[in-house]
Length: 356
Image (cartoon, rainbow, N blue to C red; front, side, top):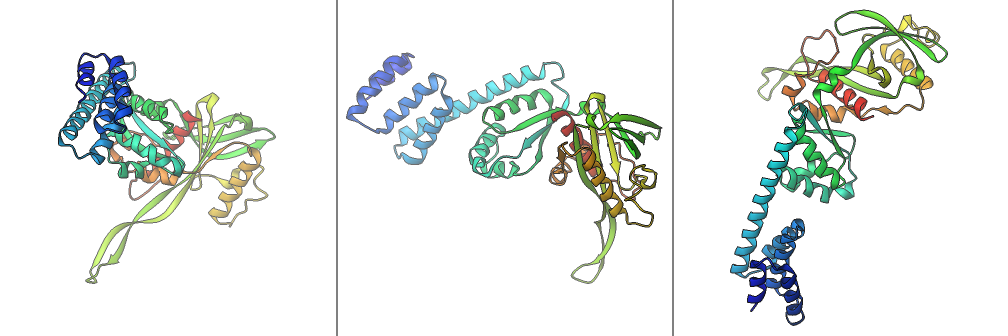
């Protein structure tokens, strides 16, 4: 019935094919074969996504075995072609300077009403099922989604960004460009402040800056783990790791100096802080003094954005322990048990530094 259309498509005469399809549609509206041939023309003209959706629709709604077979064949060829093109583009991206550096791929929060379409794009890009893809899309903050070569992750990020899915990737080596200092205490006079601090290697010194240099604040807490003894159903003693407490961290970013000033409630010398002595008293709890310090910083830099979504980010990041072992956390706390959370916090703060 539609031999002329088939002949035009085989001869790659898509203008004639479209005209013939239009002519037949007046007599056979919504005919499944005409829908199939329309998709064939769309595919040839580069509208592959539209063609793919049409083939999938035919598989759901059509019962003609021959048509179903051809629709499956076209879908398979589309998938094969897409994979080949993707592999070629990734190979080109890897060949670029820095393309093979280890990097992290971050998904940013997306509104709930956009998650369905975003999940489908994520699933198609990374060969996931839509349900699991949707679970990967954060509703708040960031999620560490992938670790891999910078070139490959940049390729994926462009695809998602074109679909309005917020994401970015950063090379782990960029963290090494930051100067990270552990603040022991502040002494402030007006807009100028001096921080007595130390490096992760134990070298001590001071840095003087203006509060206006601070462009971001990062707040988070890292768990302290301890072995606890419990009883099982048979009343036998059982040891397992449990959270004993949390250590509070607060980073100040000075981008013009490539510097991160890191405050820790366990390390900060509250009694040495000039201009804080009125509110910080001997005998007060660590929590009370820490809150007073944060209030003081808020007064000095009230308009600087504070990033405080570390906990959900960290819960996802610790699922990549091998990657986290590559990161020097610049956190030196005496603990009985090591934890990946230190490196996760430094990664989070570093990502804020470069994104901000």
